[in-house]
Amino acid sequence: MSKIGIVIICGVIGALIGLFMATGAINQTKKSERGAFSPIALVAGLAIGALGGLFLANTLIQDDNAVKKFGFDKMETFETKSGRKWVVETKWVNPLTGNTNSIETRFSEAHRSVIIFLNSNLQIDHESTSDAKDFIYKVHLNTRYELIKKIKAGELEII
Image (cartoon, rainbow, N blue to C red; front, top):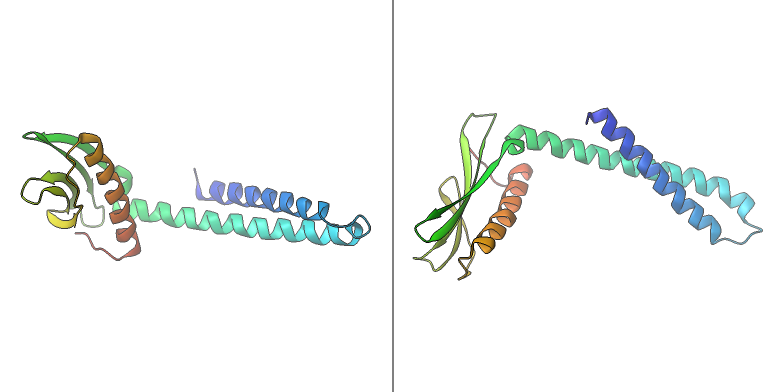
């Protein structure tokens, strides 16, 4: 969807929500006060709702730009086995540098816990003794989400 489409849809949805909230506020006033209060509530509800929708659209567009900037839209996640233990890995290419980055989650016998690597550098030691496939996958997805959030915010640098 184009950026203009996102702005229009979020603005209209925000305005509708504001209109519904204003209508609810009008229903809570006395009948004798509704004549003076109704136009003010409707205009204020529409304006605040539309501004909220535009703010949401701006946030969505910025997030979409960050996803494309770092190449997160082209991530590939796959599961393999290393011996008897499951390994979940996500790879993507950073369009800015052309380098391939990876997040790898595995159970380590040496640590007796689940460990997560970002580009072969230890990031997190999960301190869990479960080596089940579903558990490793869930830990990987949660950690991937947190690492991506840090990379977008500039708290963590990748090559």
